[in-house]
Length: 255
Image (cartoon, rainbow, N blue to C red; front, side):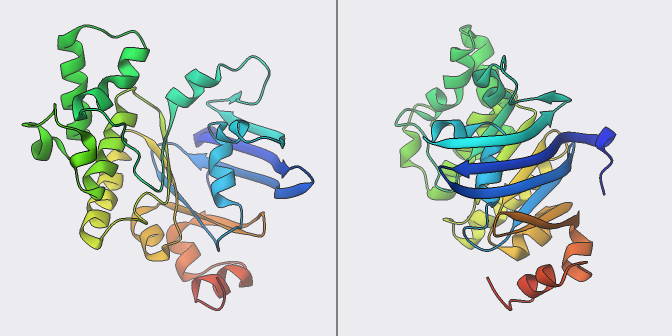
C-alpha cells in the first residue's frame, strides 16, 4: 500500500460521533497523490461521512465530534488555527446532485476566483476557458456562456460544477457519488473526465457502483458499519480481497 511519504492525505485513528452515535471508528489510511481513490460499501457504512471529514464539511452539522488526525501535505487540518475557507478551496467537493448556482455559466465559474480577489476581466476569461476545457465541456458551452447554467442537461450541469471547483485551483477533488443521478452516457463522460483530471489532482470518489470504482480508481477502500475493512490497489480488492467481508460485498452476497 501507499507509503506515508508518497501520501497526499494521511489519516490517523479518525473517529466521528453524531451525538452519542459513533459513525466512524478509528479510521487510518494513506491516500496517494495524483491518483483516484474510491470508497465503496453499503449505504450508511460511513463512506460519505469520512469523505466530508477531508474538507471539514462535517463542521456544518450540529452535535458532531471528531477525534484523530487528518493530515494533508503533513498538516493536521483539525488543529486549532486552520483557515477552513482556505482548506475548502484546496480540497474541492462535487456532490451527488449537481448544484450549479442560478447564474450564467460564466458567473458560476468566476464565482470562486472573484471571492479570492481576481477582478481583471482578461484573467477571469482565461480561468473560465481553462476550467471549462479541463472539465471537457468548453466546446458544448463556449457560445452560450451568458445563459443560465440551470438550462443545461444534468450531465452538463455536473461538469459545470466540476469546472467551478477547478476554477479556484484545488489540490484535491472530493466526489460524492458524482454520477449516480446521471444517464449512462453522461456517466461515461464523468468517468473519462476523472481519468484525465488525475494527471493534475488527487481525486477521492465515493461510489455505490462497484463497476465504476473498478473502472476509475487506482486504490479502493471498503467500509462497513463505520469501520475501514480493507484498502488496497483496486485490482487486488476486486480480484483477490484479503478479507471475507470484502469478498462477500463485491460478489453481491450483501449490500
